[in-house]
Length: 402
Length: 119
Image (cartoon, rainbow over the protein chains, first blue to last red):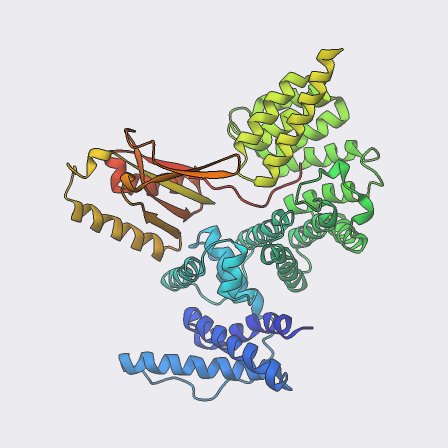
């Protein structure tokens, strides 16, 4: 394990210990960040200490005391402050989960939950997070500091996770994963690493809450999606649709782990949205070729998913499965119900374009591809959609010369 | 999501500002401070007068520089800012608080992202 990886793993545990003891999440978080910087400078030079966690805890504690002292000097509230650092090997290594729930506090916007989670629980520096989200460091620093102030003002307590808060936490982890997965068509390393970070954090949650089906489901979904990453883009960054991906590039170990997780959790627990999405991803991943994909089974799972967690995006995905099982016209018919809720959504136009192409309506498909290309804000998606449109145009003009 | 706010501007504005310039400046300053504090401000600048604009064209590999041919246009770009916020609604809300929105218009444009989904 590299020093950097080691520090990332230790950061939330040290922070958890301090927050449990002192409350003051905002001040503790600053202290841990400074201790991490100290370690990042000293460890490569002097060697990793025998008790890395104790070292970090002592360093962070010293920083914290300095800060609280200067604060209390200002405020004359020095009493009650412990002088002794907490013990490095206390049995509190699982505080990371409490921290995660704190970072996903309901008073924060999703963007702030994501940023704070990556810093406080993921142990990433502000520079790394800013670079991953393609914003200036000052913007990210401000977002994190505002988030900490908001948490403080909201009176968030360091408490055992509650079941009601879990969906928010899982959603934040899912957002982090997706940022990284979507970025993997470009060459932006810091963004791509977000997926690995999300998987690592979700594993931690799964380790703490092994009986929660949705935690297992989300971890499985991430693994089964990430398994396809090596095949999802060409060297020039252009996107390859799942049906055209080189399946020999898919990561078999991740698929095996994901399939086992989802089978295990669906066997014993009621299927929640993440478990069901993972089940669909598993069916795709296990098909030896696009043609051998079991679309009937996928459609059956989408029908369950739509009952469990109805929404226009689920219907949109089900329409693809309907088209694959019952033909493109049946899929297109279902899309008509989405014209209102997803009016300006590029994915509705993109799915419509694909289904019209399947149905042999080239003119309609071209129009829909063009609309989708105009609506998307993603550069690789726009390139992909324009290429599909151009291919139809070529095909169409050959037709005319016949 | 990142949004570019393009601040449109009337060339007669300087001769006849609808509100005192120092008040407008102070209002913009407060707005930038707020957006900075919320962690949404990515960056932005005001642009020099359109009389300073040059246009570069390269034809047959030879660059030619001319004064802006857009001098006579009714609207110019006075500046831009980039914000990173949670939704289009939030971007529109910010645009509505920009003083120039009261007499000209603020154009709000989503910024393309380098990532995407395979379809």
